[in-house]
Figure 1: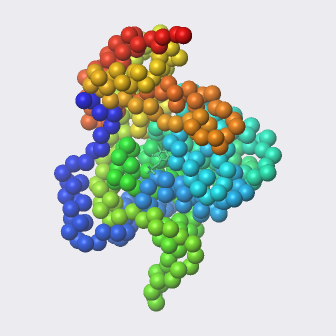
Figure 2: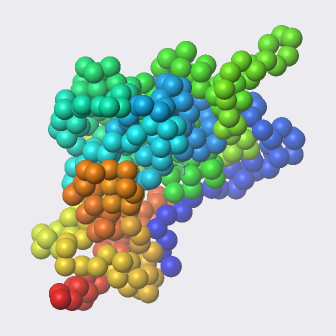
Figure 3: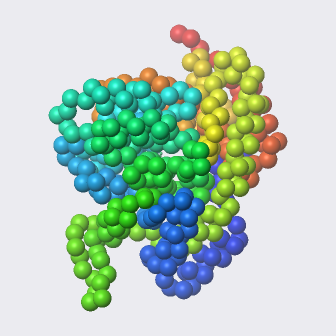
Length: 373
Ligand SMILES: *Cc1c(COP(=O)(O)O)cnc(C)c1O
């Protein structure tokens, strides 16, 4: 079976985890601190705070800005549901904006329109652009629109560690940037996440929120405010530290593979049977998702390819389709959700595997035209 994705954990990484387990220092400690400074160096930002998941990173980001009841936060329609769920979790209202069909990231024109015509009653406080599948969102436009209204920018870079715009890493352009180390992401610690920021005051706030509002002082611990337990463990950090030096070469390999997929699938996209994603500079290609034309039943295609030895899946959800939080039905996001097909992509695959996937996809969709009622 050709899997959709596979974590990249070698024997040395396993040995590094075992060392930590033997040391007995399991919870937040030296490995976490080292991982934070190595991530900050990788991202070229001032501070990184490691946490227990990407969702925890997003949740703490909203808490750090005191976003809550009476506030509204803009999210893209096409994303993993956590992006919107954290807004609901703090008692604020998620406002959904549609995405662009080629990059699957928030449509900056629709975003500007939503902000310009905002009439409340909730106070618009923040935007969470998502670098979906590793594709950098249109940050220049987003920052300009949001900053002119004093909105906070929390980048959901959960699947985009290592993606760039120019020579800047995504996740370091807004006020806060959130990352995930779930096994579906390119670098994984099992569960895990991080928040990047250039503002030391925000990092300090996040560290308190991550650990019960607790501060260590000369006389011992003091609890100086609200907080939760969103700590990463030392053995997870060891796993992440081991992968970080390899990440750029893995992303390079993924870029070559995405480019090969686009080339191999060109006959299908020329026929308009599928649409391939735009090849965007700086994309880190956590996922390669094509969009099937209307005449196909995506779920049938998934099943059929599965029978032929290839694991595929839907790409991400449409918030306006799967929840009732939005009256604004997003046409593009809905289509990506119902017709998107994620193909196997991980750096250990060989070019011949991609040829095989392209061939099976072609055979499958030429045979599986949906019956028209
Ligand atoms: C994976 C992902 C998350 C959630 O991260 P977890 O570590 O699984 O909590 C949030 N947003 C996006 C866009 C993601 O891809």
